[in-house]
Image (cartoon, rainbow, N blue to C red; front, side, top):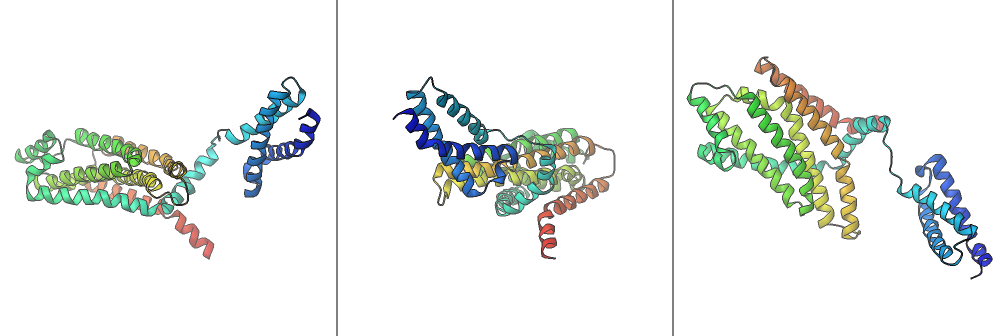
Length: 320
């Protein structure tokens, strides 16, 4: 094909691509309608093929330089990394994350269910026979709780126990999310057996220790930390569901979509773990009454409930 014929046959598409690219640069990709976005991707693909043809047949010509520049600009429109801003971060924390929790509430409920199942199974097993605690906890930990009671001291080793629980829960959160790639089996395993750990420890404390002191050390940071684990488990289950039930998508496309949904929860999970870790590091060791710590735990539970209710409050405002 002669160069003039090539230009005449395709110039309208190039002008359309340039126009759409200029609009994106000025007002952003969100200013385009769904049909315009589809059209932009189509003319970009056609123009990319035109560039490859021009490089082969008109390598030293101005038309090749023009197409190279045009396709390069549009390539950045498509593949540019979105920059975050403080405003977007605040919007995610105040509205985005709670809305995601509402959207994926059934996944979170399922995640909690697997954890609770493990908790109650180990709880009743240890109540039936305290030696069963060795199936779920380190033997040194089991003996430490038992010996503390036998020696007449109900005090808990605060630094050791709280750091053990905090480290365990952070690791569990990461595993519960990542193991979604195992069709959810790894996620369910992590949730279930972390539940058994807490259930066994709880049973031991009720049998040999001081339950009030135990909960005063666990709950102030544990309410937030355990909630983060349930959300991490939900993220893993979202990935698993996308692999098992792709619906109208290909399995690969469904997995990519599920991974994006799951990753959207990660920032909120990380922030919750940071807050829980701060409470565990600075508030839990304070020399204040156990009752005060339990009241603080109640406040954290109420604050979480209010925070998670934000989408529902917004819905009520719209109706009124």
